[in-house]
Image 1: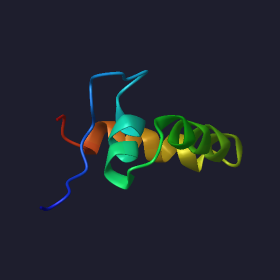
Image 2: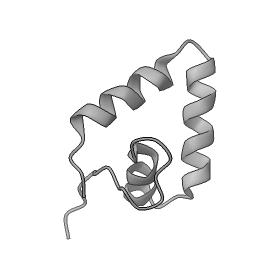
Image 3: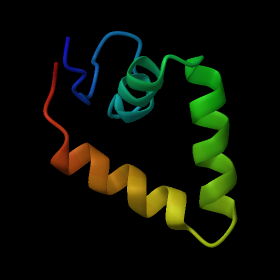
Image 4: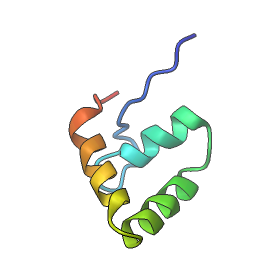
Length: 60
């Protein structure tokens, strides 16, 4: 079965990007959210990646 990266609307906080990443990599969503926040505080690359994911990833 082929894995595909999606944005997930159930349980989302903003756009569902972290939920999609957590399902794709099979990790807890809170770990992904924490990593995104830490990357956003360290130069802003997490925020840029999140915004890009919100626009580029299809909804599930």
